Structure formats: C-alpha cells, structure tokens
Length: 290
Image (cartoon, rainbow, N blue to C red; front, side, top):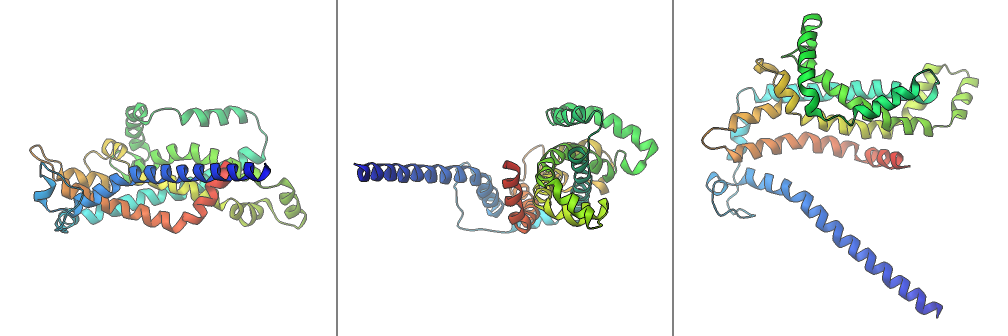
C-alpha cells in the first residue's frame, strides 16, 4: 500500500512539474513575443512593414531601418546623454541609498519610523501626478543651480535619483539588517573604525542588493521619455535617446521600421548591463525574498 501511495505521489509531482513547465514556457513566449516582433519589424523591408497582411517572419531581412536610425542627426550625442544620465543615477543612488539604509538600520533616532513610512508612501504616488509640480520645481532650481534646472541633464539626474532612492533604500535595509551586529562589534574590537567597517566589510556583504537596485535604477533612467520630454524643452543638444525616436513619428505615416530599429538599439545596453551583473542580480533578489 505504501509503495502504491508513493508511486501515486510521485506521479502527481511529475504531472504538476510538467504543468508548471508548460505554463512557464507559455508565459515566457508571451513576454518574449513583443521583443521578437520589434526585432523582426526592424529587419523587415519597408514594403513588408506597411503591408496589410503582416507575417511573423521575413525572407528578405535588411538593415535599412538600422541605417536610418543610426543616421539621425546627433544620434551619438543622444546616446552619450542617455549613458551620462543613467550612469550618474546608478552611482549616486547606490551611494546615497547604501548610507541611508545603513543609518536607518543601525541607528535609533527620533522620527525614524516616520521617515520609513514616508519612503513607502512616496513609492505609491503616480509619476504622472508629480510631473507638473516637478516642472515648476526645476524651473525654480534653474535660478539657484542652473546645472540642475530645465534644459539640463542635471534635472533628469535629480528627478530619477529622487524616484530611485525610496525603493533602493527599502530594498537595501533587508541586506544591511541581515549582517549580524556581532560582526561590527568584532571589527571594532580589532581596531577598525566605523568608516572602515562600512566600506571594507559591510559594503561587500550587501553587494548583491546593490547590484539588484542598480539594474532597476538603470532601466528606469535609460527608458525614460516622460521626464526627458518635460524638462528638456528647447535644448536639443541635451536630449536623450528616447526623444530621438520622435524624428520618425510623422503626421502622415510613421516610419515603424526605424522606430523599431532605434528601440532595438536602445535595448542592447540594457541587455549588456544585465548580462554583466546577472549572477549578483539573482543573488540580490534571493536575498531580498529572504
């Protein structure tokens, strides 16, 4: 009887695992299909792109759409601007969030709970609801600090940093709290200063969490269109890469091939960044779940 019951349980597990695998493949296919269609449209000749009978393949792939996307005036400048904004946001958010998470976890001070609640509430506010108030703030900042005002890349860095920090701080709090206090006490007994413990002991231990937050901060800043369109009004030299795609949006007919080619090119840096940090990213997300 026990053998029969064991076989039944084993068979049920195999069936459940098979169903889970099928569901996983279906979900992965649904998620990957838009990316496939984007790349396919970028490789199709213009006649197939505007055809009323779209097909999920092409027998005559071409790079004409990529050529049109790359030959946009100041395309290289837009790319550099996007890299500068995303890179600055990643570096600053990691530095500030690490220090803030350490302070909120290791120290006890007045209004600590209130500050944590405020960080949580900030993440619930829709971005669209804050766009207009932030526009007026940046217009006022221009008189005090022109580098962070309208029409400057500093305004984008400042805004993306403000939106990245709450999530990064909340996520890193779990990693900092997971480091035993006894480790800090042992380091202090060995003569290590608080600064040395912070950067030589604590920082490497929470590195997986830092990588996970850096990926999210990079993607958010890299793909931004709303803030770039709102704050970079007339300074064409400070526009970012998503704004370059507007060149192919025309009143009579959009150049969908070039739009998809530009979107594909924009995806490459994100994929490269993800591949470089994927191991630590998985470890960071696993640590966040714990």
